[in-house]
Image (cartoon, rainbow, N blue to C red; front, side, top):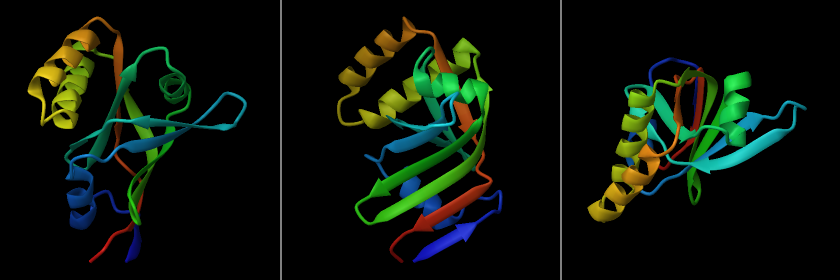
Length: 143
């Protein structure tokens, strides 16, 4: 079933889908010339918001710091969720490092040692988090 909502509360079926392990986000941002730029990223759910994180200086984070509009798609075969809105930029390093550490542990839940190796690597980087409280959610999920 495909459904669209512009409500601030994330629908329960969308939340369940986004919480499933193994899904990646495809993040669409706007380059300075207006072209769309896509990147694949890890994410976390925080309440009704989606949290993204990247090393500072990459193209998609630079785009979001300049223009906070974003579209994010998460898919698993024929099931998918699309989230659109504007992000809040979090440059505080303690928060950004906590976010990426939580993501590493989520995406490497089957190998905690690998997660901790990545966390150590991330600590050497300047990180930035982005919080998307979507203004529009579209989903095509099995009932």
